Length: 138
Image (cartoon, rainbow, N blue to C red; front, side):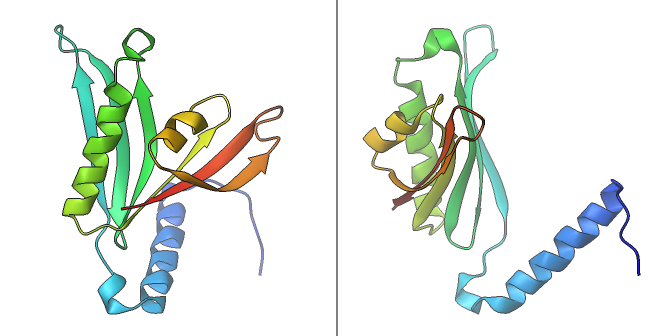
């Protein structure tokens, strides 16, 4: 047997598929829900994207991957609106939990104001900052 360093998309897809199969065999049937990618975007009058949120639902939870609002639109309530839309969508899908992570230089305080609870912190990642893991029960 040998271990080699390489990046081949097909190999990565195979490994991902095998782990998903294992995971699905390990959980109860009522927990199993298909993975669904979801996003909401905000466009300005020129039809340019000036904000958005991206995530996915599965196993009755929503994982928020990215939230971004252009600098000139921040403090206008757009981030709150995007998170609320995602939470409403998740509730409609039967989700009971939202999970996300954010960095100390991004928005941990923003999420705490929206009712998110920090359940873990990875200190000094990236160097000089920290990564905050958060949840909200719906």
